Image (cartoon, rainbow, N blue to C red; front, side):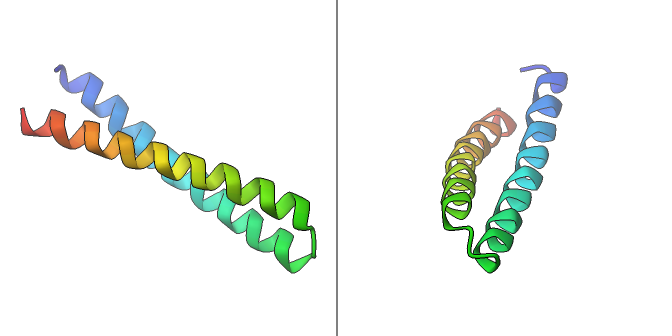
Length: 66
């Protein structure tokens, strides 16, 4: 695997972590404002992205071992 590919995956991994953090913060704000519908949507999307970032982490780990 080319280093540029690994670099792109690592960059995406870092960016996804930031997006997830932002979504969880928005969720917390929605909860504080009693916006239950918004909070539910935000946490659902954050959780889904978290699962994807875990899968991406596995791919990166496998590529780094090669």
